[in-house]
Image (cartoon, rainbow, N blue to C red; front, top):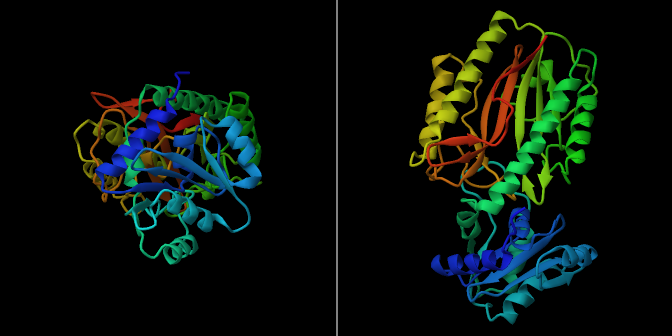
Length: 382
């Protein structure tokens, strides 16, 4: 794998904080910690990058020794119990920032999902009370602007994660049969991606998701944690994988149909597959992300299925999956070469079933390049 220059990343964050008028960036999101440390940091922590270029980490003492050993040139300050805000205050004071303007990880405007590690309300109130002269503002873009466009080392890791997704999906599909349970299929997928190097199924939805039959058709139902429900004939099955390799994520969901679809199910498939191809074609450099979303919605409307299709068509992908660009009507981003997104297409009709696409693609000079070899279609099993 190409090496990652973590010191250069930290310097770019410091420079961008200056450009945006901040004296420091205090990142608490897991994606930011991973991006700037190179270590897996699942517990509460923060990275403090001052505009002058200093970078240090604040992390839970019980896991700090491992993080120091596995991270890259990390200056780590430890806390125990509920002392996290107090240690942040001390470090800000140490750097002369008690009255500074500090960017915090507070929220992604317009996004319903909260990125793991956003600052909590209790932590914000504690910091504000301890540093009444400091100016705290939402500063997610300090690092998101930089994470938006991937370099060669990141693309290599994202390709690798997608390749592992391919293998996991293949093994999961091979295990799909009438009578097998959703949990059995999820177990086969987990085993496969672990064999290929995945270290964590990162999703908050329960890791690997498998849904079958009526469980694929919940209205607006983007989540199906695997259960002991047996898979039957003539029904949809959704496999949704979330491997993590060297801190970079894949997000891969594809539908299977086991048996023969009814006429109504076939019409649902036609709509979904046309929407998928429309979205893949829409991701051309220079186009507004919001315009891409409009094109997908128009296909749902054309088929008379707009009430069952979601106006959400994916998100950014890297060390976090709750990051720009959010492919919806509220996005202010443009399709730009170097972006990597999990392209999504969601269509769920109660009583018939549903389909979900989450499909890693790299934006090249001429459009979307799939990072998966598995085709973006409904995979039919006899």
